[in-house]
Length: 124
Length: 108
Image (cartoon, rainbow over all chains, first blue to last red; front, top):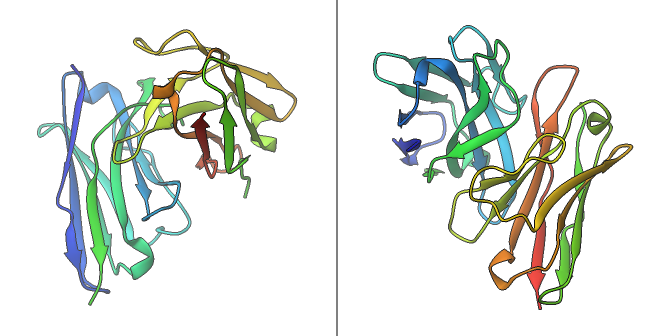
């Protein structure tokens, strides 16, 4: 069965760096893109970034562009989110989710499988 | 940039029908997807495309459209349907993903 498992969350000081991982299994990883979506405490879902199945097309929300980087390692079937210069506003549960469109050159918006999330707290 | 908006809260009596709406110009070009999220859990996809349900989603969930408004209808709401519901779509100008603010559904 499709599984997505996030890791790497924790407490990080403002301005430092943190890398989140999303380990995928149960499907052909190289055929599907992946998204990161976050949820601040008591708030709604906010899309953060997406990468296409081949890693060539990457999209970022304006709120993280220039600070966060999404990447994928097909050999490890893992997607990463490198968070640089985080601020308190980045405190949230971060979910990775699979893009439902197979072999899509541009990530879609239909997220058919989600991980359980990893908590990121930005605090000094 | 575009946005999609939802009513913050809706309530329904047990066994009755409820409609949750999502509005936005992007919905004139893209179908909405709908996600259910219960407290402490990850979201799950319940409706996508014109009116498609992933495997395992009960058929009391359905989707529909009118102009720039998408609707999620639950026919015969059950206690286990109490949750937050989010719609999403796509911004055609930059392909960014748009999420609505969510609707908290209470089943009375």
